[in-house]
Amino acid sequence: MVFLGMVVMAGCSSGQAAGPSPSATPSDAARLGAGLLSAPDGMSVAYGPETGAYGSLKATRQGMAALKDAKVSEPGCAGAGQLDPAKLGAAPAAVVAYSSKDGSITQAIVATDFFPGPVPARCASYKAEVSGAKVTYRTVPLKLPARGERSFAFLTTAVSDGEAAQIGAVVIGRKGVVTSLLVIGAKVKKEGLAELARLADEKLARITRQPS
Image (cartoon, rainbow, N blue to C red; front, top):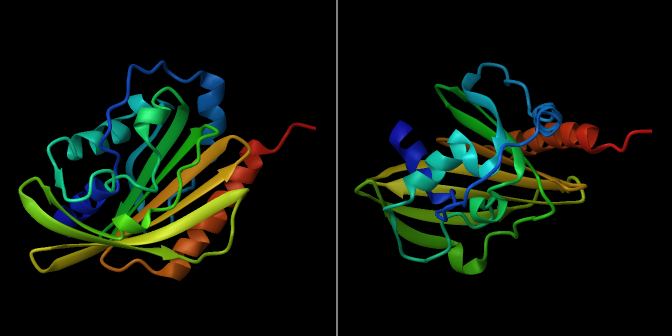
């Protein structure tokens, strides 16, 4: 399960490298960090919180490294529907990850007007070789309640050597800030993903509210 979690993350990470990125200012970091979710019941911090330029964050760099040598049957599909370090390398960001024996949740918040589009139809199914393992990825869109000014969600299932893992993803945009949620588990429940999206959007609304 741990290994499959890694290959699922690799399948949903951008494979493009970011250029040199300046650090986010302390005020940017504080504002975005305040929008991160707290640890859900039964989960503990696995990474972060970390703030700074998106392309310089450890989580971003690890995601890019995971796909550096991966062979993908459909170019451009690994990372489709997700925040792209090639476009957002210098953007202020905050990231945190929580984990339990059943899976993990990773949240990123980026100050940007760029909003990724949903996963294209050609990327609904593709194959990849990740760290020597052959993996099949299948993605379906999820219909969740609309959040923010725009949002979308999808569910990816990764199968390797007879084992399967899932990743549920939600992307929400509000007033120049975008948050991404990635939930990994043996089976990701739509209801749980919808609740996380609701909570994340409430926090996003708070940090993007114009001062009176």
